[in-house]
Image (cartoon, rainbow, N blue to C red; front, side, top):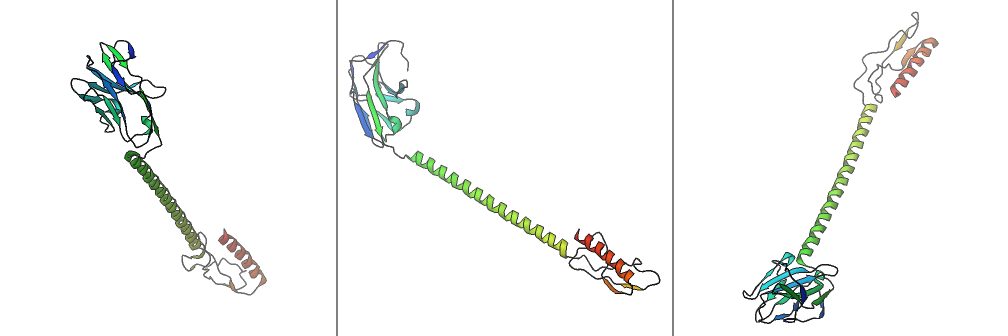
Amino acid sequence: HTVGGSVKFSSSVHQQSDFLSVEAGGSVTLHCFYKDDGTAWLYWYKQTLGQKPRLVSTFFVYDERGTFYHEFKNNPRFTLETKNGRNHLTISNLRTSDSATYYCARDYSLILEFFEGTTVSVKGSVITADSSVSGFTDEVDSLVLVYFLSGALTFSTILVVLLAFSVYKMNKRNSHHSPGTVTKTLCVSLCPLNMSCEVKSLFLSTIRLSRKIYCSLLNKCRSKTCLSVIAQHLFIFLSGSIL
């Protein structure tokens, strides 16, 4: 509510000027009396340190009903007593944010008149239902996040272990599992035509047969030349198996 006019301290409206130190969670009543001298509107203003006065309530004396504004509207902590020349403001369940100077004022002939004001200092803190629910919600959200991250870490660990095990089994199978018995033999005239050389194919269970067909060790050879040739082929065979 704005008034086009001067601002001065009123002598026809009386407010108990005082400094009140109260505990959080308690209540306080700020007294404001007025005379029936043509005053029509009465107001309460709240001014915190370094801020402009903020309208709390208005009261039309011929209606005896008060109206609250801003954050004070529909707030059950703030009530007005507006009978028998009174404009008392009661604040219950006090919070530290209620600490301020409260002014009672009146609008008379386009002049806004103020009292000296009552300073309220709220000591300590109180846990409200809203803050409790908010804190509980934050705690639950934090726990959910922790459980989620823990589950994700556990899942990742299990996945890594399974992948490592799969790779291990694959390597083991590739290294030790044979696709079948060798049916072909490496009989490529290892010995001269005038010499007999018997070569048998042996199944090597510890070597994977993929790109090459391998021949087993010589079962019987009658010449040093044959032994030399087979030794060379055996070396090539083993080298290829390792690679």
